[in-house]
Structures are given as C-alpha cells and as structure tokens.
Image 1 (cartoon, rainbow, N blue to C red):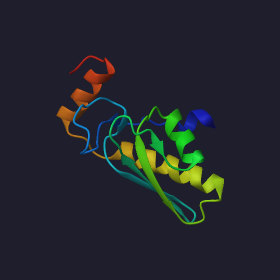
Image 2: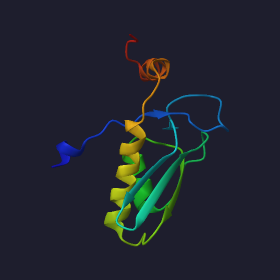
Image 3: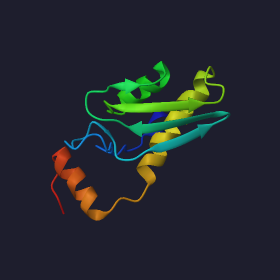
Length: 115
C-alpha cells in the first residue's frame, strides 16, 4: 500500500520574504482536506523551520521540506485526518501546473540535466 501512495513533492523557495532561492520550502501555498480537518501549508523563508502541529511537521520532514508555516482548522485532534489532510495538501501542491522554465530551474537545482 505504501508504494501506491508515493508522490513527487515540488520543492522550491515560494516565500516572498526569501530571495535566496533553493529547495528548502514549497513552491506555492497548498491546501488539503480530510474529514473536518483542513490544512494549509505556506512557504516560509530559509531558517524559520517547520511551524505547525507535530503530526504535520513529521510529514513535512519526510517530504524534505525544511521551512514552512502551517495552519489547520477543524477537529485537529483526529491525528489520522490531520495526517491525511497534510498529505492531500502536498499532493495538491505537486499537481499544479508549473511553467517549463520553472521546471528546468527546479531540475538544475536538484542536479538533474536540463532539457
């Protein structure tokens, strides 16, 4: 089951406060929902760390995100729904359309060959 739910997470520097670039945060703000829980993951400047609930922080760490703000609403004591909403937010962030130039810059930052 775990291999069926592997997703690619687009990382970048989507915070307007950080002009350094890099792949330490999300490219854009993302929202996910599961049950009554809604999680919003917002890109943050380098050095902030992960600001949010422990469940959300753990999932973002596993995704390789180092800096992000999170905001959650609903019955967040339901740990399973909080985790699912966070995963859905990461899925939604990766499914957005990205311009070709931004994809090329992302691959170059990750060390892959550009097209």
